[in-house]
Length: 64
Image 1 (cartoon, rainbow, N blue to C red):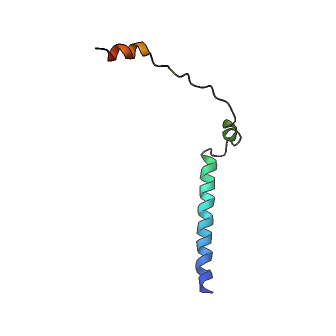
Image 2: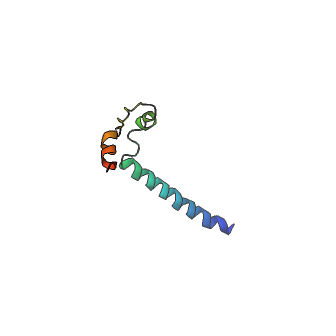
Image 3: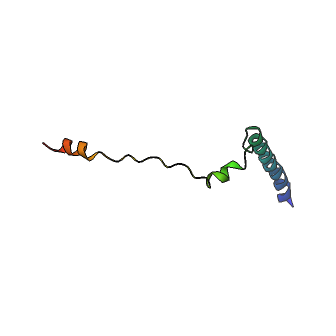
């Protein structure tokens, strides 16, 4: 029975902490755009062009 007198205040403190964290997240814009991030994985992004090495320049450097 004495444990309940410890658990009730601890649960109220924990609930208050979660409520404050939720309010902070809402005020800082964490929940403004919930649709776009999951869709980014589905969009095709243009591939970056790969530069091919210039073999003539590499050969000129290695020849004595």
